[in-house]
Image (cartoon, rainbow, N blue to C red; front, side, top):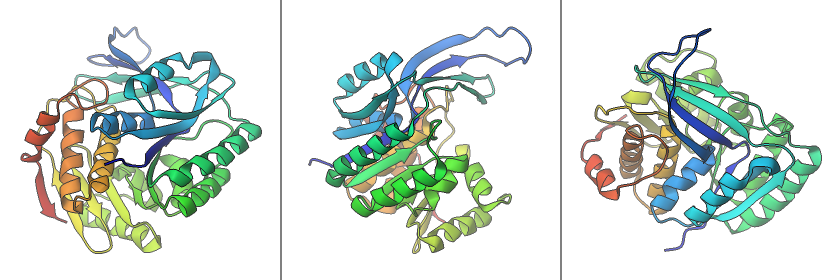
Length: 311
C-alpha cells in the first residue's frame, strides 16, 4: 500500500557523533568518532520509515554551502526531496556520549531564514502538503523564523493535513502546541517545562497529558527514557517498558520512536500495539550509533520483551 507521508525539518544538522569516557570541562578530551551524519529530527524519522518500506516526502530548509551530504542521503533513501535551499550553511551538532550514557550536545549556529525565504516555504509547503495524509513536524526553529509565524503555519497545515505528528522542545514546542497538533511526543522534562512544574510520579505525568488533551491534542506520547513511554488519549492510556539495553548512543531514540508510532498508525494497528512496536524500534536504536533499522527481525524479537500495562 502506498502511504502519503511526509516529514518536515526546519533546522536540520550534520550530527558529529563521538564517544568520550568522561567529558572534562576546560581540558583536552580525546574523542572516539562514531559517525558524521546528515540528520535532523524529521530526517531521522524519515530514515526509520524508509527502512520500514514507507516511501515519503521530506521538506524544510538546507544551507546552499554544504547541502551535498543531504543530497546523497535523500538519493540513498529514495525520498521525494522538497527541501528549500537558502543562503548559508546547515549547522553542525556535536553529540558526545560518555561512559555513563550521558549525552552532551554542542549545537552550533547555522543559516538564517529571511522573511522572503519563509514566505516562499509557506506557499510551497501548503501546496504540496495537500497530497499528504500524515506529516511529522520535528525539531527546533532556525534563526529568522518567529514563533508566531511558526504557529500560524502549523494552523494552516492542520487545515489541509490534520494528522500532524509534532516533536519539538522549549519555545518551539510551546508555539507548536498552540495549533493543537494531532499527536505530540514530548519527553517528561519537556512536559514539565510546558506545565511549569515538576512531575515526579506517573499519575502527575498522566494528569499533565490530560491537560493537553482537554485543550485539543488527541494523542500525547511521553518519552520516559529507560522507564519507557506513556501514551494518553481521551479514552485510554498505556505504559510500555523496554528491557534493559546496552546503550551505545541515545541520539535519535526519540526520533526512532516517532517513526515507529507513525508506522503503527499508518498500518492501522491499535494504540497498544503501535506503542509496543514504537518502543521496540526505540529500544534497539540505543544499541547503535546512528538512526535506522538494520534488522527487521530484531524488531520482531524485541516486541515480546516490551512490557505493556494499562496506564
